[in-house]
Amino acid sequence: MALAGSAIGLGNIWRFPYMVGEYGGAAFIVVYIVATALVSLPVFVAEVMIGRRSGRNARQALAVLAPGKPFWNALGFLPVLIPLLIASYYSVIGGWSVEYFLDACSMKFVTTPPEEVGGLFGSFITSAWAPVVTHLVFLFLSVAIVAIGVQKGIEKFSKVSIPVLFVLIIVIIFYALSLPGSGEGVRYLLQPDFSEVTPRTFAYAMGQSFYSLSLGMGIIITYGSYMKKSESIFASSTATAVSDLSFALLAGLAIMPAVFAAGIEPGAGPGLIFQSIPYTFCKMSAESPFLGTLVSAAFFLTIIVAAMTSCISLIEVGTAYLTERFGLRRPAAAFLLFFICGGIGVLCSLSFGPLAGFTVFGKNLFDLFDWFASNILLLLMALLSVIFVGFVMKKEDVRDEFTNGGTLVRSSKVFGIFYFLIKWVAPVALVLIFISNFIL
Ligand code: PHE
Image (cartoon, rainbow, N blue to C red):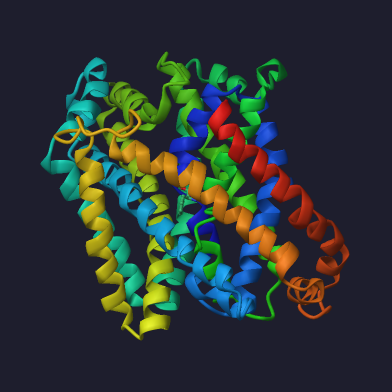
């Protein structure tokens, strides 16, 4: 559940539907599924394996598995720094959801005319104070759960929140499908148009799948280090990938019909869930203020919960490192990270308002971090993980870890395929995608 909690997040609700919208509807989904099965899943397995085999945090895992190899030891810093960077801007979006949840509860969607609700987003994120405060509140709550501990905090929270998420999203789908004109949205999502598939589709589908499974960030290594030796890495990894994909599809089904019913452009970008969806909520509230308030509050609560389990996993990477390496107490480590990520996050938040003039390569800080982390660092780290498992670890050790010493029948059967995917297919695909980021 904790693995699923990390994977299921804003990537599924915020990024996936707009990616589908922008890059070819169902054709994108087909490419996405193939990319997940052939590349992301093997990378996922490789990362869990590094974590469980070493039993260490992301910083020290590679060093423990390859003693006396300074290159791999030095690399360990990467998976500790990447999550901090991502947590900083990720919690800003978490903060936006907190704001929208509060708006829903205070019946703002009942009192605002539908035509004006889209504009609220712009004025909210460009203001100085409100988004900074909600960002810090969101981050504080995530850090508090990490501080409580892995089993009592993270696992407990995930065990409750992940099933709740599925229920909430299904409730919203029922509502979305009952809207007049929603059929168009379902068709848009489920009818493939392969003429839309270009090399770019592959690069973006791959990138999205990586982001969605929280790969290349040390998270899966860290969570893998907590996994029992008796558990099947193959089964847990597949279960995570399947729940992540199902949730992404469900989120698409909850969002696209409403987008079409409201007559909104489906490729509207990240603003889709904060601008287009509230339009539907306003319409709904005009007919029934009670239902409108209830569904909109449920929707933004879903986003908060999904984002929080992911943010928790980001914070856990650094926390594990600080406690295992420096012997800090868990709460001290977690709250230290609160100050670091909170501080950087404030700058990201302000980059839509007062700091909007400060840009690098034409991107504000928030976009710069997102781009740098998801298109560059994450691919690099994932590439290193598969190379490590494929070429540095001994094949016998990899088999031993994958099959739990030969005791898992199903894992033993698929080992050959996975080993091939990890060693050859994933590295080649990753290099191609990395290059394509610069030329497409
Ligand atoms: N996988 C999470 C999602 O889909 C996002 C995430 C990204 C989590 C990066 C951790 C790190 O939203």
